[in-house]
Length: 180
Image (tube, rainbow, N blue to C red; front, side):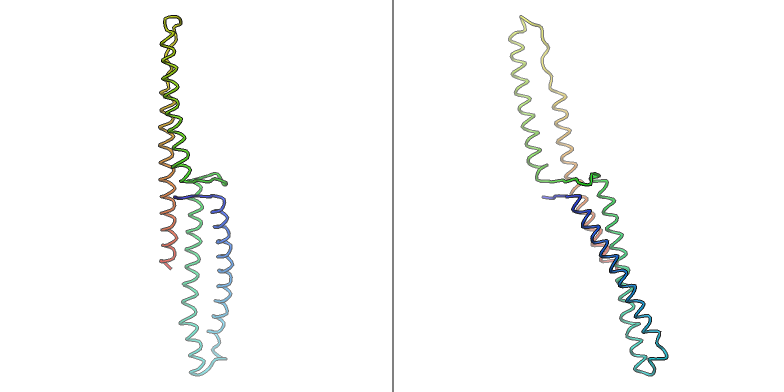
């Protein structure tokens, strides 16, 4: 069963984006330091100096570039999640609970449908009993049942959208990690 707490997800994404921003700044500073070491041609002479510079150029610099790219792709994926989240549930304090939709709400709608059918049937039977005294039309509950069917359809669509959101955004995060 899936549950979406929009406010909590927004907060978590915002906190993660803030942490990524800090890490990006730290990586930029670290990259400057590594570039400073690799530029020490005069201070690091000979085979030892060449080995130290090569070590930083061949090991540290590619890793720092990789990590920068990873951070950029991860930030991009998180921002896209926020945008897609807006289309799924635009209300910032929104909350979607599949358990509630699948069980409580659906059972409530089905119970309301049964109760309405029963009450309308009883009312129409009573109307029929007095039809020789008063001319009353039968009660028609077709609009109610149509709205009930629409509500059940909306429940299923919401659950499908919730699952699609979860699946697609999970894949987007996995892909961001693999591309780097």
